[in-house]
Amino acid sequence: MTEPTPGLTSGAVARRLGVAPTTLRSWDRRYGIGPASRESGRHRRWTPGDIAVLQEMCRLTASGVPPAEAARAARAASASPAAVEDVPPAPPLPEKGPALPERRPALPDELRQERRGLGRAAVRLDSAAMDELLDSVLARRGLVAAWEDVMAPALHAVGRQWDTSEDRYVEVEHLLSWHVSTALRRVGAPGRTARAADTPPVLLACVPNEQHTLPLEALAAGLAELALPTRMFGAAVPPEALDQAVRRTGPAAVVLWAQARSTAHHPLARHVADTSWGVKGARARTTVLLAGPGWAGQTPGPGMLRPGGLREALALLRGLCEAARGGEPAASPGSPASRS
Image (spheres, rainbow, N blue to C red):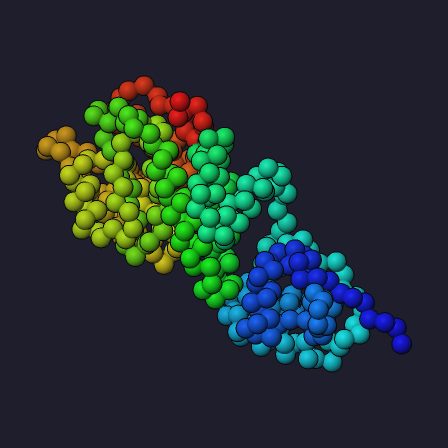
């Protein structure tokens, strides 16, 4: 009888499936999705049959099936006659998990190290290391690249860990969010709003029932770099409060953030775009920027724009503020030089 192959380590399986080793351990502990055989004193080894169960688990959870239900279905599939221990070796698994529709280009080593360093510091709950890493990335890459290439991906990765581990790592996400927010607020150095007196402000607000404020904080930091005045109203702004703020400030633009389609408030956006102020015969209106993935798939109406990201939003807002002020162009957003 031939001796069975030793199988793959948990780390190797995790890399091939595109999940974290902690996710594999969590699935094993909670749902019994683990190696069929173990030897005391040795690392766990995954056979092709074990990996096939994991692949099915990944496929089901990626399609929205709850983890417990996905685990039952994956184990049931492994019990079919075709799923026996002596199945032929499985073909090489993709580097990324089945949840990804296509393989993404490899990250530069330096960028990968920055993301991993920030994520590992967050998992350790190491506040000093997070502050140092965030300040370093902002200084070397500039705001836009730091947000899009390091901060936001790190936050998304921690969020995925939370989703796949059934509410573990909540403290990690909260601490990382706080430190990212603090670093973004440090970007706007004192004295950078010298032009505020002759420029109408930009109003930043989350739609009602929306709690995700960090993207708006990144936008506020970029506007501070450009010395453009803002009014940050934060999470879940009531429609009545936003209406009063628009009428009282006469803003150059209003940015409404919606993270999900379930929170995107189209009647509110239409109301803000239609709101006018000023004396009769010289009344003015503002431009509404529909920011965030919640507005995806919707065609902006009159008086509305939908930026594709932080850089585009900053460029649009800079132009709107210049038009309202009638002054000279501002510095280019997102570069280290714009903070000098």
